Length: 236
Image 1 (cartoon, rainbow, N blue to C red):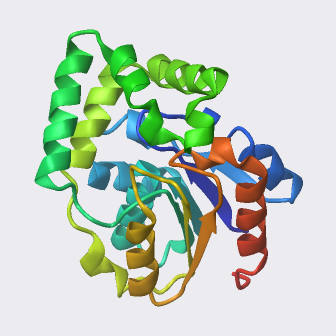
Image 2: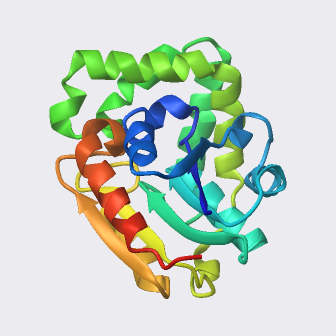
């Protein structure tokens, strides 16, 4: 039986999937949440640890940095990865401008200003309708602060150091779901379009009224997209 592995985004944990886990389990899927991002300093090392710690064929569902991790795992062991869902992510490397932004943010995190940075950037994480939801923003900021500044710094460094993964895409033979929010300012839809066009077996889904954190913003729609895609996967 395939094992579904949920891979959270940067400085996130299982709470990012709080609405997906019950729906996937209720549909009869065997689900685990990967935490290798909190234990290893680079995406290649995270991928190797993930593959070593789990057995059998894997369906990797990754959000943002979790999608980058899924691509690294598939590249390292293509026969182990039966399918991937890449949510709110990109195959591109960081641009110099993004590296500068992350580097500046790391300085702020080191100086104890993580909450100020997170709140200032909430508008980029959510659809405009949800960025105005104080309770949702508080929930997100509290989630990341619980993971902590040490992880914020380490995972930003891991993301900054990643390779351009676009040359890998043409060699990916497993089915891939590429999904993004229609108002994602951090990984705009053009990046998802690029991946879906380059992957040999890909399905693109755009989730309406969602930004970067669509698992929280549109949980029912995300659940429906994932369950429909999983149901259509060929048997192992």
